[in-house]
Image (cartoon, rainbow, N blue to C red):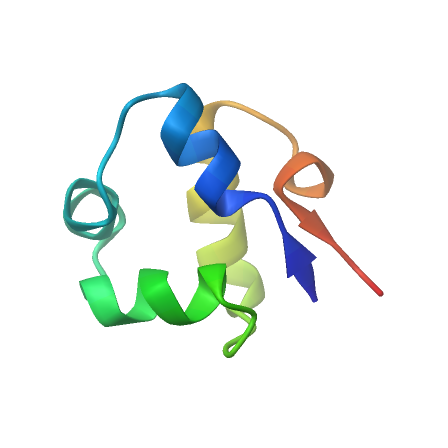
Length: 63
């Protein structure tokens, strides 16, 4: 699944570490999601979208 997580982090000036702490995962999880090595669970995808105050479809694109 493609995603724009890195773009949203950059737009909000948030580090991988800061995002990881806010949503309760490790930095390695954020890295894996950004590199398309790991597809987050639906619950985690919603947490990420909610954190950036956007729709889940804005961050994650099913391919």
